[in-house]
Every structure is written in C-alpha cells, then in structure tokens.
Amino acid sequence: MAEKYLIECDCKTVKISMTGEPRVRGFCHCEDCRDLLKIPYHAVTAWNEDQVTVEQGADSLLSYQHPTLEMKRCFCKDCGETLFNTNAMNWRIVSQNLVRKCYAGNLPAALRSQSHFFYGSRIVDIDDDLPKHD
Image 1 (cartoon, rainbow, N blue to C red):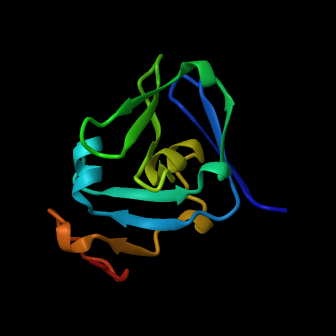
Image 2: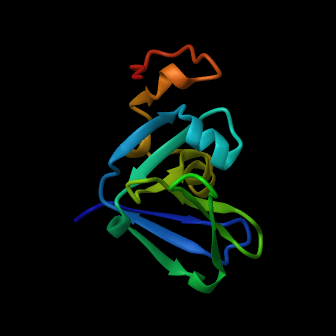
C-alpha cells in the first residue's frame, strides 16, 4: 500500500493528503519560486496532481494565480496558510516546512531533500553535502 502523508493549515480548516512517492524532494532555488513565495529558496516535495487530495475544507482553499508565471499559490482563506503551490507542469509543490510542522517537527525520512536544483540561480549559498544542479 502506498504511503499517505497528511497536512493541514494552521486553523485546521483545510486538510490535504499526498499519496505515494513525490516526484521531487529537494531545495528549489529558481527565480519563479522566489517571486511567487517571496522566499530565498524553497524546501519542497513535488507531487503529481492525482497524488494530492483535499480531504477537508475544499471550500476554504483559495488560489492566487501569479500574473506572469504559470504558477499558483493555494492557501486557506481563513488563516492564510499556504498548503501548496503549482508549477508549469501542474505539480503540487508542498513545503517541507509545512510537512515538518504537521509531523510534530519531524520530516518523514521518505520526504527529505535529496538535492538542490536551479542552484545556479541561487541568491544564498548552502553548505551541505547534497548534490547541486543548475
């Protein structure tokens, strides 16, 4: 049976599940993520659309379509917590920080980062042993 991971927003109105193995587990340094999320880099798990299900609170899940990028930020209308964003491939990009928060501060081993990608676009150097890909 495929592993199932559960996340929820701060107010617990929206609950989302991710099933199976993510497409990507890593640190994204792309300009698009920085622009959409206003962060220097993003620790992510990326999932196919059919692997992510809104289990509760679909009517409270809003999205912001970036004006120039093929990306959306999906968040709870009540507490403002971003639950995932989408990219041009329509993957569901879930923050490892949110997963960690929903698992009492422990990121499940199967979701830990394996590499850095778009590292050539970085604005912050990261000193770790993970592979770094442009």
